[in-house]
Length: 116
Image (cartoon, rainbow, N blue to C red; front, side, top):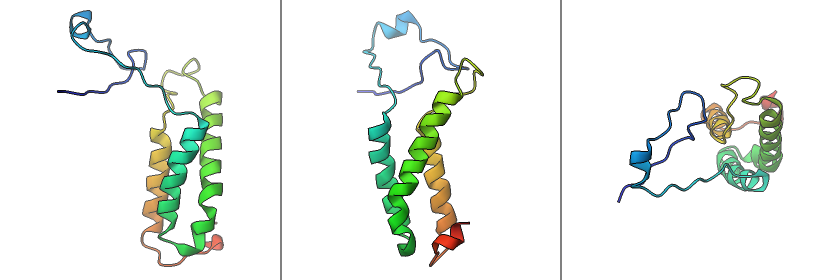
């Protein structure tokens, strides 16, 4: 069995798959997760990430809420209708989590003042 994934052909730079190919494969469309799912997913990531710095553990939920809110507002404000490259996906939030995790990695202890 083979499983593949791709963005829809309406995304910038994408080409539609041929009907010849598509008649041989089932196609399932899965949309991006909603606010509640994003909060659960990235809350889990942030709690795991902030475990590295015990003094920051309490900020996992506020960080998650801020990330999801910023993502949702940006997605509403900057649309593909404005510019074709304004395509928002949860991939952006994953990059944020990875960036924060990399910045915290070399630190043994960090207080709230250290984030300023």
